[in-house]
Image (cartoon, rainbow, N blue to C red; front, top):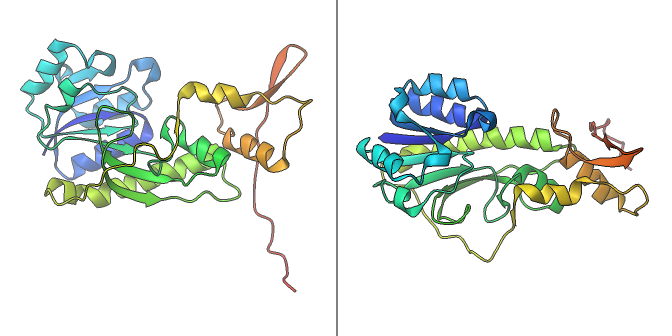
Length: 256
């Protein structure tokens, strides 16, 4: 398989490593800009490509970039935590389509920060491998894997579990994709939930004078506990005061 890889973060790096171990041919690499690209050096080193085969994600609508990718003759595009919407003129280049590994149980939590919203809103958590269409996480589903939220999860612990589940799902499903034997089912477009990055701004500030249900406040604090990111806060003396939760199970209580 000739693969155009579009990836970011630790999960993107690990999926790319796994593909290389399967002796797949990575013909091109698309990355976020350096200030937004995590594990950039590791991804570039693993891909082991010439500079002409590495493209900035912000330029994917440029005719010259689309033509350069076309000349690489990729069979499939694999997207992992990639933050740019692909234009139809790019999607149509790939005979086996474009697939995306998304850390939510679609149709729940399309878009940004699924780990946060599964805790805040109580929506099912998991990971999905799906085809890319013109929308945001709206394409046909190939496979899914549940990753239920526990009582002591924070945004950080759930995120890490979703990463590991996503890597497991991808490795389990890739052979079927490679042999054209994978399943495919359409999403119900008016079902589920979706969120943008800026939606967190609406929930992060805590009003010390407001009344909250204890459960809702706990869920907000644990969902936004993800060091080193700042998370939820209240204001005091003209400054933001950030809060984090440290959760752990106590010993089991005797029954009876």
